[in-house]
Length: 201
Length: 201
DNA sequence: ACTTGAACATGACCGTTGTCATGGGTCGGC
DNA sequence: GCCGACCCATGACAACGGTCATGTTCAAGT
Image (cartoon, rainbow over all chains, first blue to last red; front, side, top):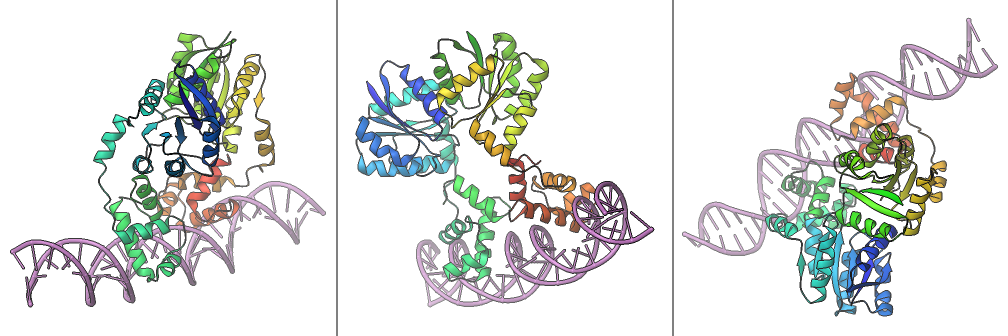
């Protein structure tokens, strides 16, 4: 019997997934969490062997939760589930020690198959995702551009970014302009967003 | 036995909800759709009595689907389900003829209760949502502001908006400035977004 | 009839933003 | 050593965006 913990902030989805998995003879949902920061405690109480983590959660998201569990509960297998298939999520998931990555678009059968494979020590990659990830070119942004773009994502004015980096405003604008060009966007906000989606920052 | 149709673009969520509902003795999921434009056909084939519509769907979203079903299948009860509880969704759902509105944060028991109540001819409103909806002030935007804001949402330059309305660029900017003030935002894009979320456009 | 207030339209003003041309560093290959 | 390629930094410049002050129209209230 495979003991599973489900972490998803949407109560309905959480319950529905539990119902789905409990239909399987060899799978049992032993705990549910609405946020990442409840997972560690719930793991100790329930003794789950596989953890299903949704990326989007209010306080502690799935990716950071995975990082923490990797240290505190290294024996537990982690399966990341997400609504949006951004290349950045995919990369970060495995860097955070996850054993599998699944999109919520996948058929239910794939989820149960993934849980079994992960439980037996294997890795799970949505083949469609893997293809897309390969063709995603590696980061074309320079160090400075990444740094500035990350700050620009906060929405603050250029002058503030410049001040915090001890640069002139013109320099910051220039780096942003380069980043905008490289991301095929037309302003800093879109540039920051797509860079994040591509896993470049 | 209550026959239910589920429309949700995420395969996993769809299957999980079906599993959850099929656990109930008096409820049976007879059809699943990945998009709103499949619903009418699936309804004819399955004879479902209650339709579960997710708001977010790629081609034909849940709200528009509800509008169409209201005419083509007036006897079918509609339950709108959504991830994000924007006041606009709530209002539009009932204008589109839905009998119920539920957020995916609700506990699973509330979903089955809602299906039973809707099936027996009642209306279902998440009490928490109803409160929030009442306190949402009615549309503070003027006719012109709404019109311009809707165009601005497309992201086009001011000059283009001005041309399509036969106005000067300055006038358009002025209306946008007013709308920005009324929405407590700091640029046209945010203003358009929150106006849409509030159901003002 | 007069006043008041709201919605609309317009142009001026100024800060912000993105682009460009330029120059100074560093690194690797010829 | 020399040269080209690359990254970084900077200021000039033009375009865009939001705010403001002003003027007009129209409907409601007095």
